[in-house]
Length: 254
Image (cartoon, rainbow, N blue to C red; front, top):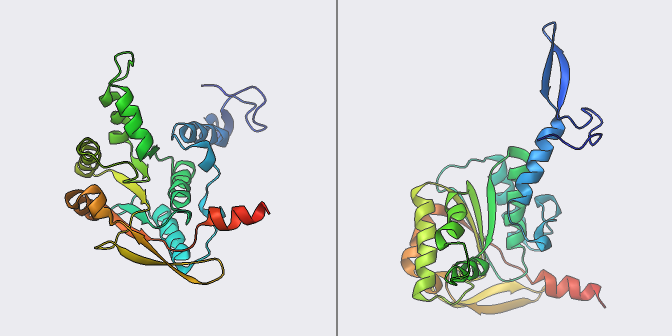
């Protein structure tokens, strides 16, 4: 597909440049062609507008676990494709940057390595599947889930956020099992505890004070079999700290 005329100073928008190679003039792809292709791939990822700015280089760490999580994310990008278990499970309270890191990885892989990636919010996915049950909806449930099952890298955001009915567990189990069987890479984020049992987890307030929060274990939320399967698919990246949105953004409004 040709670019807009004059959009590139190097090729004039043709997407190709003529270079002298071994005494012959040869047309080769201009760098802008790859950049435009990456731009199309980014638009196809489904990243919500609120998170499109998220990059690993603009992630702000205010806790030692956030710094460690950032290093894990950077290592993941550098070492892509990773060895099994391939994915990452970012676990921690709201506002510590779990989604930021996951999207930052996604953006880096699309821009630097041309990886075909997809971002899916767990609750939004369930809503889209439910809408296919309406006779007026032309999409089927399989058409909604097919891109999710086939994406080279999937970000499944807010795992366990919806009420976990048997139907929801079946949908989640199908996605996880299919991607596991196909050895496809999945990044998960969840605000549920990855501890063996529900109990207080320590966070740090902006003034350095220690806070305790009680969370439901992820295994209780999604079921032990699915949680066990995640161990085979992912490395857990725990993140602690205070809620950035509540602490910094509200302070900025004062």
